Image (cartoon, rainbow, N blue to C red):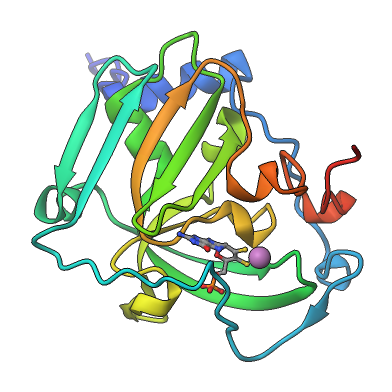
Length: 221
Ligand SMILES: Nc1nc2c(c(=O)[nH]1)N[C@H]1C(S)=C(S)[C@@H](COP(=O)(O)O)O[C@H]1N2
Ligand SMILES: [Mo]
């Protein structure tokens, strides 16, 4: 007699991901594109990496640094630097599209996927968006599905080196499928909220979502 092969134990993580997939909860409508279609409309390619921010580039030591995750979650978190680095680490390569019309291909990142954070905090059924706050006072919002995109990463490294202070080190979010203002530098707080509401640029005329493929640059009103 040969033993029946048994199903491998489903970890809590895969269970959650399967549940999300079956609910279609985090579908972002992203589709893969052919190489010839890689540059969104109205964008041009750059080789350098421009620096854009409100003008204050906070210096955050690893001792001071914290990431608070709160609001509509089952398990709120307040992580120090070491605790953050103990989360699962991943590497990926993505393009950047800035609303000021530059795009930069093939940026390699290392950090914690937002999906892995979501597996720990478990947003409640009432969570529909996130509001993010940075050490320079910058805020920006994302619908939950965009925050949960499979390539969204809480990044600590770019091209194998720690992200520099001017680019948002020690940690910034990168949400590759939206304009880059949706990728807060020096991120310190992620609040899960019931209803999407505007952050800094969204209050100042930028679009609530910021999809580069449909040129969601500015809000209509
Ligand atoms: N904390 C913070 N994050 C921010 C900003 C900012 O002013 N403060 N500017 C946003 C904008 S408008 C852009 S285009 C990108 C620029 O990132 P970079 O300087 O690394 O290119 O950061 C985004 N994230
Ligand atoms: Mo920007």
